[in-house]
Image 1 (cartoon, each protein chain N blue to C red):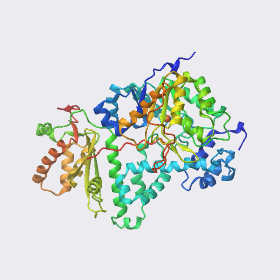
Image 2: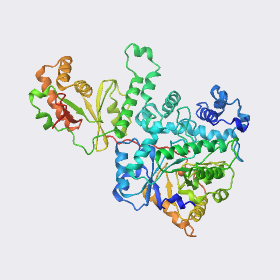
Image 3: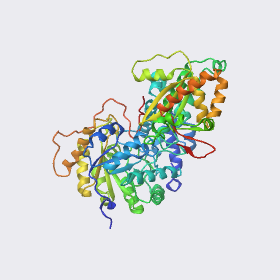
Image 4: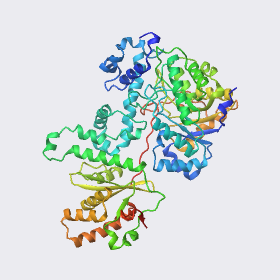
Length: 306
Length: 303
Ligand SMILES: [Fe+2]
């Protein structure tokens, strides 16, 4: 018998911490429930970003979300990177450490993209054995997210939900269910997102993500540059029902609006915890803004200089 | 593609990385020698590896990753080198960046290191190697200087600093006894860096930040000290002699050695040199260049 959320608390409605919001957060201490950081932006920082994080961690629960673990790669795991994750997690009292079911590069290179793995017994074994190594090292369960993806492989023999279920059962790792990614991938790969959610082992979901994406006509791209669209909110309603309440985080990484706008967007989740409908009318399609359409993860911190 | 028992994840990943990071695009990537080494496949048989969707072909789908690869990294370089991007113009900056990313693909978990070889790359690929050998200073030197300045600013911003710790005060230097003076070693703060340029790129950078749309300046040497106070990077122009002194101090030489060596090279009367030194110590301590003084004999910091 598994405890709900693998025993983790429901932290409530959180926002992804972005440097443009640093001054606002430090000054106003907005009533947001928790923050998620991009781990790579802080593990080496010895300047303003880390100093600010330390102040924020004194007031708010912090969760660490990484983009470079590359759990699906055939390159060796980077223990120096893991050591830095572990150190920052202990220094900021991070509630958990997450990354993605993906690979980011091979042969010593990093594409800085979240590339999908073929879903079959071979890759499942490979990923599970690496998860166990990471969990042994970090001394805590790893939480892995379903990525948005744009290709599927001829060598895949199982669905993503089957892969995720077997993975969490074999390793006791947790799941970060990105509801927007389920939607994006369902459109890109022609599957029913409700069927996907129907097979998710909800007691192993520790957290969920919400985000905006861009509709490119023939496919969707996970751009994290706008509001959450109505079909994704409807899926979130399902996730909330299935999990009985879950730490929920909004990711906004491009054309980032003022903090209040981002915070207000994640607070809309409350409407889907009851059987309410949003008051400002549903947004049915990701709006294309004419800016470069780039899947996350982009993480760059501009220096302050005089 | 092979039967499942021959499935090789490493081979697939090597192939996919090669294809999506090929500068000529997906189809050229698939046809490239490197990719063909892994899978002898043509774009029209790509479905043996990548499935199609209802709306897109296998090539179009893989192309989404291909388009994103350079676009993402170019955006990151543009953010790291805004003044250089302005100096070059978008088109040329992208062209140089594209070449750079092929020569120096990212090998780090962090995007913060992406631009680390950019100045070196510009030096290695400069089109004017012959003029350079003849001692001419030209456009490439300006670009290299600018890239060096921007890269160092970024490193100082997020590198080690002394915030929250005391820095060395002028009174501490003045209280040193004459017998001790030549023996002591000034400990620079960890953020201090000194840079020597052939162009006044610091002025150019200032004007760029003030949105004054600067033109490429005429060459003249410029010496800059960078350090960080209250988490903000400070730029301070220094004189050539100051640069030489700080260079020796950063090497860990004792003050006696530093002064003797630099004064000998400087051809400045000793009295005048002593006066300048006093001014500079004042300037350096105000700018918080140093964290402490140590004496090699005592092996302990002098308060
Ligand atoms: Fe996500």
